[in-house]
Length: 544
Image 1 (cartoon, helix red, strand yellow):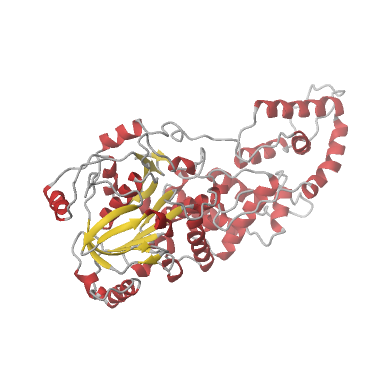
Image 2 (tube, helix red, strand yellow; image 1 turned 90 degrees about the vertical axis):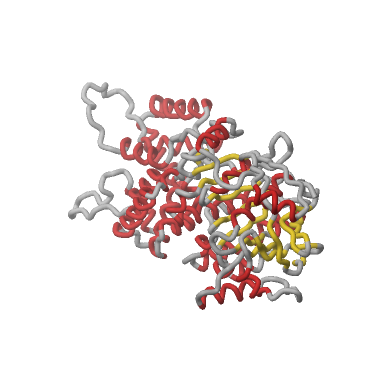
């Protein structure tokens, strides 16, 4: 038997029977479990190698750094050659085309998403907000959508939270709006309920905690394009995308939320594929228990929905964790391909985990599954994969095949060399600060401040129309002449000319009369031409 898998199957291991993972059923998802040090990472690596050989791109989080070795040539060590010989396997060292990613931009290309793409539900979980605080966060997103303020990064989110925060109480007769030009925003926010300064302050403090954990690195532009995960190399092999997650694991909520966001984005962006002959992408979710720990019911419902429906997009999701009981039953029932490494039964909870793991397999009369789970050695596993019309095979005890790429981490020098020839080199490495909510709110405050230094101005000069009116008129012309743009993108040269021309004509020709007309017209703009943003509960599930 050679290193090459068949055109339809991936060779996983061998016992009394050979264990094959059928590519046509690989998008029915899977689960790899086992105690620390029993070989889960090796199982993940050999599955990733098999998918890559079949031309299937792979994404996997590298928690300990060991998985990075898949990018380097394997080493024919004695124990590897012995395992290969026992399996009649013609071992040939190999290496795989790999792209490294890192939220912090230290060990791979930076990974970013905008605040708007994440959405309020996932952001609330990331910030560990309660129901009231999450409600206020939803108000902030709603106001930003209605006012056309793009939320791209941390400073945008802070700015919109400050904008909807109630103004300080004024003495009788003073301007209740505070004279800050944001009175209309504050009033609009209060229509959705009692938005208090205390709640805003709590959210801001939670943002500071996330920022101190490095979360600000994740929010911004250029935002990740998931099509960059779905590449093949010049030999037709699937590219393996490795997320350096050793540092990210110090912020477990950020880690889990980030991977869940990626799943929701894949669900949204990919077209329906039915049951393709092989997956379009295989997604390995390591330390999966972090996704489900303390998750509210609404979030669990959406996770179950995404896992169930993303199969039809041709994406296979493989959860990797220590115990099967880490995964809710509703999700566990959808994971048809199973690899179970050894579990230890020292405590009542351990015994429960062993029993639960045994019950998830199709029984084999030759095996006492629960007993075997506690007896498995390193590199051994109980496996059951889907076959035929999607029914699981009987559980088998097998030795996992040795990886052909390196087992263990690559060196920093090797990583640097791989990054230097990456197909996405330069695309994400430099952050971009586009005009967004922070700049737009600051501009509104500046333009609505009391005018100063008007001495010496010719009294015959027409008074310029208020900036807010000009913006609304520009928006109307944008809608009529097609100059509106997606949030977070820069104006084209033509749009800049149109905007400046509109303001110039309005100021010099229409003069002070434009202000009165603008107030009449502009006052109804918000009602007649509204922005309706349909947000999926996962932040990226549905776009505008």
